[in-house]
Amino acid sequence: MSESGVPNVDTEVLREAIRGEYHAVATSPNQGFHFHTGRAHAKRMGYEDAWLDGVPEGSVDSFAGTGNPFSIGVLQHGERVVDIACGAGIDSLIAAAMVGPSGAVVGVDMTPAMLDKARLGARAAGLANVEFIEGLGESLPVPDSWADVVISNGSINLMPDKLRAFGEIHRVLREGGRLQVADILVQKAVPENAKERIDLWTG
Amino acid sequence: MVTAAGFEDFAITWREDVFAGAPQDSSAAAFGTLGINFRARKP
Image (cartoon, rainbow over all chains, first blue to last red):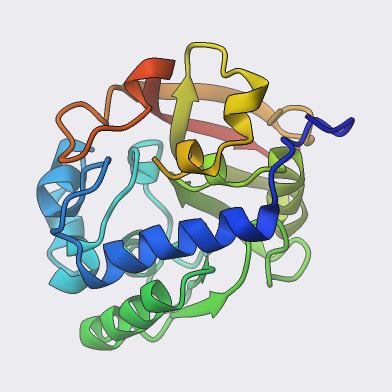
């Protein structure tokens, strides 16, 4: 581990491996992964039918979250939302429906195939208050203090520099803004040499 | 780490083994990995 606490892993190699994994989730969501995907998984995570009914099936198929940011609290009309590592857009589209036309949602992801699917989903759902931008959680393409809420689902664990990622979330949130995140918790200590193995980051 | 970044009111609101039964084996079980939901607020 470096002095900053960031694991000694080649960040670009790691990101490329993650892009490859999630390209497959976008293009072949039913092939079988080391995590669950799709509507049944979303339902198990507590997603309500009313939320999913407005989301095109392509975005639901590629859902691979580790929880449910909306279980922490539904979003309010007019709120501005950033969805970090939005994937095929299921959470962004649900958020766009919750905040309504007076609100706005920005979904950020680094995997082009996921962004393509998310944009298709927004068009199919007729949602004009959501946009999808290619970018990284560690350097969000969002102005300072823009967001009322930041959501994310299963992505921060894939970022080597987590303090930087949370710093970016802090930067884009307004004062009093909320962080509603699903991710993972590792209960056993992970050896330093394991943190340097990209196959363990992606599997 | 969340509080180190300047947030307050941090709380984990839910946790569950979300990897059990997945189609492919993973390293998740070896490290006791759980899915969680958490919240925090910027002061």
